[in-house]
Amino acid sequence: MEAIEGTVLAGRSFEPVHGSVVVEDGYITAIEETSERESDHDRIVLPAFVNAHTHVGDSVAKEAAVGLGLEEAVVPPDSLKHQQIAAADDETLIAAMHRTLRFMQRTGTAAFLDFREFGVDGARALREAAEGLNIEDFIFGSDDTAVLDVADGFGASGANDDDFTARRTATEERGAPFAIHAGEPDATDIHPALDLEPELLVHMVHAEAEHLERVADQDVPIAVCPRANRVLEVGRPPIETLLEYTDVALGTDNVMLNAPSMFREMEYTAKTFDLPSRTVLRMATTAGAEAVGLDCGVIEPGRRAALLVLDGDSDNLSAVADPVDAVVRRASPLDIHRVVC
Image 1 (cartoon, rainbow, N blue to C red):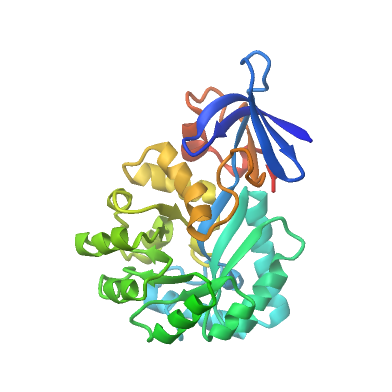
Image 2: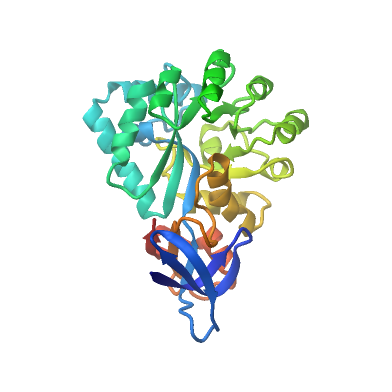
């Protein structure tokens, strides 16, 4: 048993509790409150991050798409991303993905939801890349539904790219989640995506009220990636509006476009959109976990102990008025004291 002391951002509301998180056999057994004088308040204890949308496969092509638009950079099958991944041998690709995952683990990410290209071989390569690391890999596989023998679900590039009806049906029969990109370059693929009744939508930059009413009726969460949308110049996701209709989770998208840092994604989101810090922190933790049923993303008894401990007295975080604002708007990997996963 271990007691991890500090200011604990507890529960779904991230209410600061002065005390400790009690961990036994990898699970949270209690949150014990103490007086401020007795607790080590130089620490801030929060849920480790859940990155709700990544493409780790393009770790072999970091910053290769600078200055390119969406289609040239990432749209299948002929984009620069797909060319670079196809050109890499397995050893190089797996090593590059492993290093990205190690960076994610070290910077506080407990789990990630990845859209993995290249079917069964791609999913297997990502599984191998994650070996030996304390980071949970939730893979949305691609191409043929045979990928579900390896992956956790199926990830579709977009409803305008292909007819995914048969693959959606097969995925449902397997009891696996189906996720799909929608509304990234424009709104034309949103209704067709919703016709597939996905468990997760990604991007929804161009979502309008008629789409969001369907989203609410179908109770489907959305993963947004605002930094990637900015880099590819596809627009600004209406996050404030999306939150009125459904749960919204935060992802970093393509490794070739942005470092998979949830600190950077949170800060950008908090300072670009009219959102409270608690909302942004929930997007970076609880929402992504709940989208696919992971047992992390919130600090409460019975949950897996996936925790991030920050040094609240670092040169960067000392004298910050509110610990949640400190985490979302200012903290960086340099402030990490410990990652518990």
